Length: 106
Image (cartoon, rainbow, N blue to C red):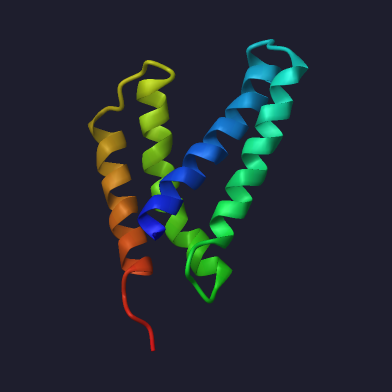
C-alpha cells in the first residue's frame, strides 16, 4: 500500500504547492488557493496512512519519492526534461528511501 500512498501524496503536495506558485508567481487568480489548500490537506492525510510507527521515518522515506515526483512534474507539467544529474540524484534519493522504508524492524 505504501507504494501507492507515497506517489499519491507527492502528487497532492506538488499540486497544492503549484497552486500557490501559480497564484504568486504566474499571476493566476486567488481562487487557485482553494484546490491548493484541499490538495495540501489530502497530502497530509495520505501520509498518515503510511504503515510506520514513527512519523519522522515515514516523512524521511517520502522525501525520496517527492524528489522523483517533482522531476516528473517538471517534465510532464512544466515541459522541461530532467537532465542526467536530475535523474542520478532522484535515483540516489529513491535508493535512500528504500533503505529507510523496506527493512523489517523488530
